[in-house]
Image (tube, rainbow, N blue to C red):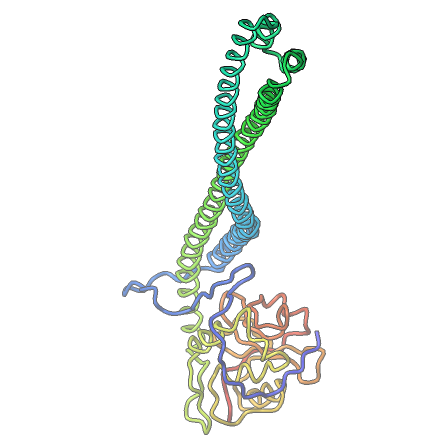
Length: 406
């Protein structure tokens, strides 16, 4: 992999990032884990490898958990839309119910009014029938056709009434007005009764519509409640997943920090803590562990350092001066001064490690312990933590050196 490793003064402004593959929360490498005062046994290479395997296993578990969380979150918008839609349907149905109820009230009012008109028409007919009775009596006294008048008095069917009334009308020209009025009143009553039936049918229909819409409103409200419960369940699922991820992350931190902290301490002891060169013109601002702590905050981020591997390392050390233009120049200067360790694959934590990459500038990274290095040029051109074995694919390993700036 060709990397343009040039010196670059970049002020770090991003927050803490990732630490290992699959993790999205930084693991700060500090000496916070209290070690017994009596010389503890240093972890073996097997212990470090076991810790790394556990770290990878837990990282994968967190990845799966986060995927489940993301899947739950992806369902939240649809569930929320369902809630909104159901609430809108419930509101519309409620408005329709209210409108239907108003229509029922109006229809009933029309029915009541029509019944009042029918009563009034019946009174008119009753009064006319009284007049007909008087006419019948006079006709009888005068020898008229009482039987015909009696027929009209007993007629109940509108058509029969009309026929009989015509017959009675013939009995006397003077009685024609009374009979005409009686026929008109009967006709009006017939029409009012028909209108009453129509209005009653309308009222029944409106009542049925109101009941149907009320049922629709209840169903819409139930759907809204179900949708809200779905959202609540998803939120609960999301929170449970996040709690589980947080617990796993705490376990990772505990395991990783305990083993790696001991391993780093032993590495520094063996190397004499030689990541800091003293008595030089350009001293560095940070020790090996401090260098790693600083670099860790950029893991998964730090794309501003892409193609600036030496600038990243220089900033990690807080070099006050003496910065070289290329990573290979930094190596040659340290080697010439007697600080280089060619081919040594057991550097102390925080040491500068070099590879002969395909780029003329070559490549420099920071040793993080446990066979891992913090480097620029990771996935997505971000800072990453990779194994030395992975780095070997970028080019032959050169060696390591402390932070020497002349």
